[in-house]
Length: 298
Image (tube, rainbow, N blue to C red; front, side, top):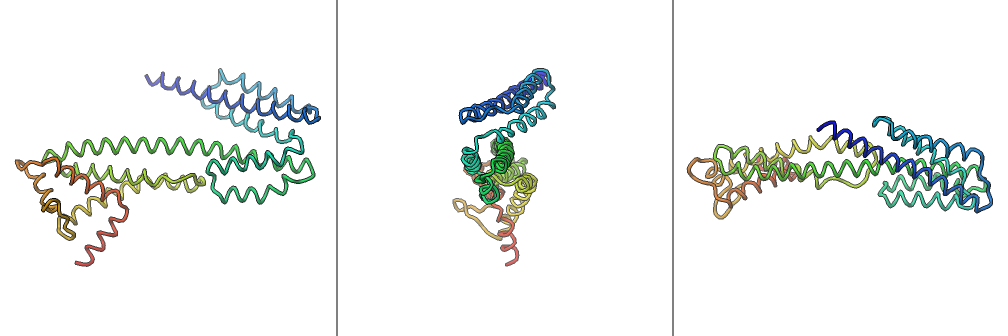
């Protein structure tokens, strides 16, 4: 089974790499065609680059999965060289179109503004070599952000779906645990896990630079652990009566005691109430501050 999964992932990676190489090759061909329409003959180097892209495409069927990434990177580097074949009158337009596209992807505004400030004057240069060099820098930056945006979307989607699965499983198990007196503490803990995970999901931010994104991923376990701890501590504070909450004339302590006492029974409204409170306490990052305020005033 694991072998089949590995083979499927390899074939999927091969298809993606083949599409990427063909895309770079087609982009280079289109650029050369536009140059010819503008009266600029194909330079000898263009044939060399196209042959190299064709050679990379031929390597894909037999390449190992760890080699496919290198093939895609080489094809991308060759594709970026098309910037040196653009007709001079089109360089400025295509440079700014690429920068505008990055803005549409959600690239941080300060990054887009920096690119405009640094490269716009060069894109407008009367020297074709300088203008094309600036266009190459724009294409390099655009390809880099394109990969990053894809990785960001993939990572955040996986994180969101995993957290959603944890939330659903935790809540379901919490509901069942609350019906057994000796499992009520486990039910409260599971509800706290669900609330903490929900808090992380709501805070998955927009596209950010690599350092900020990696830092936010590193903080996910910490935020979940903090939410769980806050929920447990706050539940204890509620049981002590520091901040009594009434549920149909019953306090939080009364509900918890009724569900945790064998023979008393824990009706569905009590289960839902205890689960909701524990999840809410795990969801709010301000719970520890709230607990400190309640305890310090006593």
